[in-house]
Amino acid sequence: MANLLNQARPIISAPPFSPDALAAPEADDELADEAASAADAEWRALTVPATHHGDRLDRALAALVPEFSRSYLSQLVADGAARLNGAAVAKPAHKLRAGDRLEIELRPTPMSQAFVPQAMPLTVLYEDEHLAVIDKPAGLVVHPAPGHWSGTLLNALLARDARAAQLPRAGIVHRLDKDTSGLLVVARSRATMDALVARIGARQVTREYLALAHRPWRGPAEREIEAPIGRDVRNRLRMAVVDLARQPGKPAQTRIELLRNAEQGCLLRCLLRTGRTHQIRVHLAHLGHPLVADALYGGAPAAGMARQALHARRLAFEHPITGQALDFQAPLPADLAAALAAWRLQSPR
Picture 1 (tube, rainbow, N blue to C red):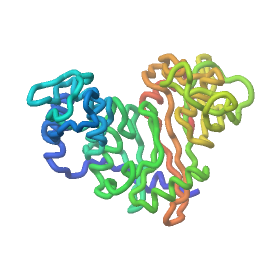
Picture 2: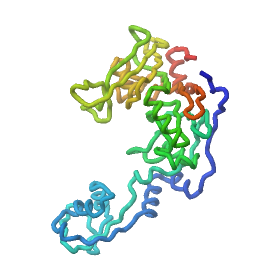
Picture 3: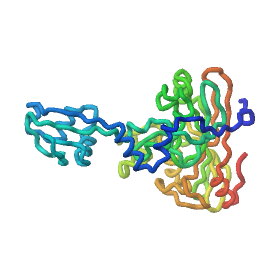
Picture 4: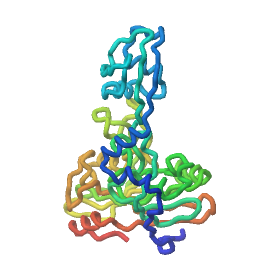
């Protein structure tokens, strides 16, 4: 396969952007949220119909303002965003009467403010009119989610490429965990996005990772792990290897190759056959080799690593439009390179 690593020069991208759009992200987070809410809030005036006589305030609101969830409307009431017959009301359980005049300030949800452009530097290893390959640093969230509604890769893509706003998820076709570094491909057109999604589903995209794990590797130097993954019933924040006959899950397959062994642990090459949530982290923990510094799955800080020691090093696929063979490698980030040196492990080529 043609290696384009030397042909595609890294681009540090921070394109021109509207000062108005930049004002909120650069301000204090809480102040920015308040400013956005004040600018975009809508007061909705309602008259309680006879069908909701005697209902709780939050229950009636959920029926009368169906575009918001009952839990969110309850929170608005508790936050002082509602008035009943001209007076403030802060109890979601307040009982209503037919004919009551109800006013509520419909403030934007954090989710509704997530999909906004935010210019930030991105290292782009390759780009054409159809797609881009990005070397994501550890610590960057890929897609907005609870707790991370801004400052994500999606926000950056919206800022650097006007066409991203026309694509689902701004062209993101696969993800890396926040603390995993390395390569991602993103689409710049709908045709490219559909084709990339299909190729990933058909296992026609090579996704290779470097993993620094606890405990020296024992047994065969190469191993194929087939172990279904589902939600951990004891901790909903985790995934786990599951018995599909007893609980929900999906088949998951990872190829693991030993690269280097040390007294403290091992350096592994992991090739994804499937793409389940936290797949490599779960499979290695299941084998008794949790990633260094991966506290969620039993790893501990070591060799100076403060985040899970996982790096998406190589990405290879056939260009979905031109048919050209593309093959990229991302250099080791500084923290992982230092960790290998601390354990006296030679960096792989």
